[in-house]
Amino acid sequence: MEHGGIFYYQFIPGLNKLPMQVGNAALVSIILLILFFLGYRSLKKKGDDIIPDEKFTLLNFMELIVEMSIKLIEDNMGEVGKSLLYILGSLIVFILFNNLSGLVPGFAPATSNLNTTLALALTVFFMYQFYGFKVHGAKYLKHFMGPFLWLAPLMFPIELIGHFARPMSLSLRLFGNMMGDHLVVGIFFLLAPLLVPLPIMFLGIFVSVVQTLVFVLLSMAYFSGAIEHEHEEEHGTPALEEATEAA
Amino acid sequence: MKLGTPKTKKWVDLVSKYGTIGLEMGICVFLGVVFGAYLDKIFHTQPWLTLIFTLFGIVAGFKSLYKLAHDLMKREAEEAKRDKREGEKRDS
Image (cartoon, rainbow over all chains, first blue to last red; front, side):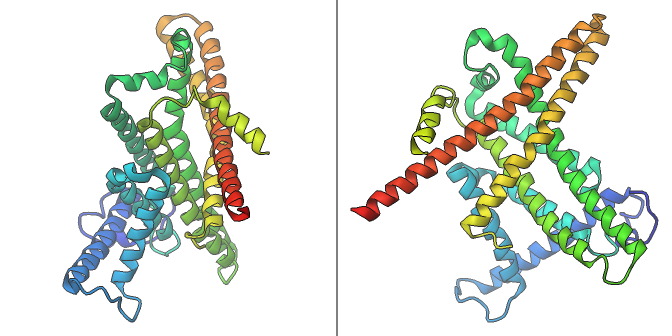
């Protein structure tokens, strides 16, 4: 967004010449690095002592984030998810902290710029295609061919369009939600700075968390779609029959 | 917002799945039109490839809708089965 003002990243040498979204993303990443480094150091200092601290410390906070990420990934992907913990966990932390940084004065969230979200979505896109090829080899192309071979010339462009729509919808959703929220808070702040933007800012916290979850859940769905085996089409109708039977 | 409870988890899951579909159907059609127009420009076959790829895009959008309904129905069937099994266990 093209509004003036003073931002924290402009005071850091090396970052002040960068575009706004890159500077903010770098600043948030630096903050994250420091947080995780401090958490790691206090974890190391603690050693094998398993009794939790009496107060809510930084270590508890970092453990909460990491455990939540691991639980989210394992619930949705099972054992396979463990190998994807690095990319998905970094996505969770990066997007969540960038979204929430939009509510702090002096930060402009990097996720309210289409460049950042498109970069994240393209990373997910190329990673899941890569994992598909890694797990299945050349057989991964069968995912694009549809159920029958004679349908392949028809199904291939359709599947191709469907796959290219994924990074676009991922990036546009995150960008639209974050920019909309940021803009609404800004406009309310211009109209009535006292107390009026508060409900919108609460909504902003909610939107930040939900959009992070939506981005990561969809990425996980794409990853497991690329990794899983193509048997679903054959068992498609029994599942439907069971559903009607149960109902 | 409590992440751990099953109700919230299901809610977030449904929001992420259903919230996708509108945007994705629109983007599929858009991508079909853009691909078709680009290929038309290369091969000088206006307007045929645009029309064909627009149809492909529309089909791709509906295919993602079908896939969503299919996945949700399968999961619902699994849940119903699990509920039934638990009910039987309780009865016996």
